[in-house]
Length: 128
Image (cartoon, rainbow, N blue to C red; front, side, top):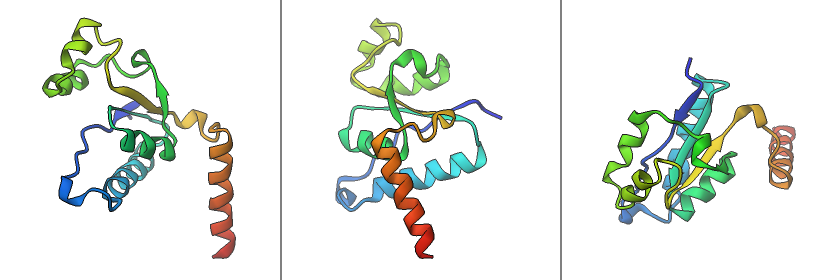
């Protein structure tokens, strides 16, 4: 079973932005991954603030690139990015992207946001 997985490369056509489609897709994939690979860390990198917000809401935390992966297959996917030169010059230690990591072993350590989300879930369960 994998110890770390990547979620990366979601692009929504401009015609379909602003309706919550990216959040629905990311949430579905995130939940599927957690179910299929419980215990695996999930990471991604992005320059987009909306994706950072979605990731944060799902439980990802911003991390340094050294906390992600050294797998060349993952970083090869960055070759088409216009900022790839930054990544290669720094030997994959930094970029203009933000690395984000969901670590299930740190579940519930989200501070106030995590507590509010757990209250919301409990409230929904009580109503059912």
